[in-house]
Image (tube, rainbow, N blue to C red):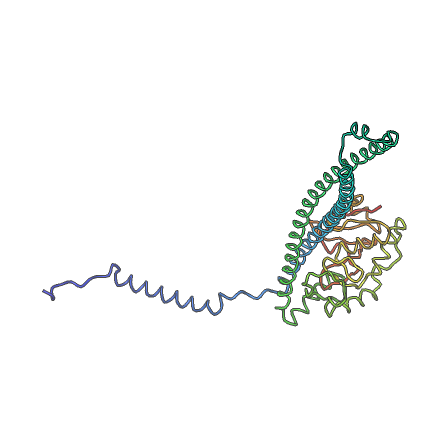
Length: 379
């Protein structure tokens, strides 16, 4: 019987089995090949690294301006909260004084026995003296009524102040949360840019810095995004080793130092201040005097001219009269990128003074090195 039993056949024929086996071996070989080479990310070119770092710096600057805006609002909310708290404390002190006065009046009334005035008049041996005292008592009653009114008024005011303070505190905490979020965004973008740059070889780094220098119109450049702490200390210690060389180049090149026909004395004063900052480091969130971010520099320059500007790029653009690129005059604020995330101070001849980004100190640069977004004339 066993000899006549047919063996179990595979559902695939012999040729099909051979084909499947061949494909499996080919797949295995292909997988082995790509495990060693195809699965590894191709090394980015210097141009690709530059494009990505530029994008990260731009995004970091957007986050920086949002950080500046959140900080400005948080500072305003904190000032308002402190003012309300101080006013509530003063009101509470006046309330306590009024309460003490009411307590003294109540004690005096208790000591007098609180007799009906007609009974007191009937019992007194000196009616004239009684009538005189009654007149004084009436005046005291008027003072007491005024004191009660004062207490009620202070209580109402204190309740209102406490309600306003609670609202301001909620607002303050919201701005502080946004502040922390934007700080984390800036630090993250700058750290990512630094990691990309650290992957470059010395030769690639040299090519990268040459490309950046060519774009900036400067013979020296440094691009390390080392300032990722998020602390706007404004100290020279927060810059990289190349910054001092760049500062010397900017100060000695004479770029943009031709006499400028500023339209008025305030614009001239703003430009003069900005020139004095050449070579100082970029630190995000900084407003001087030792370091600046882009809007911090323009704010400080116009403050030196006696004009108060708002803190951020997207509020500074609305601080004056909009002008076209063809109408630019020295002292105008020039803005860049679609999100209005960068600003410089125009000095004439197609040049501006600006604080570019981490690793690049305050310098003179052409306004066409970034996408132009608009301009504003102050005062």
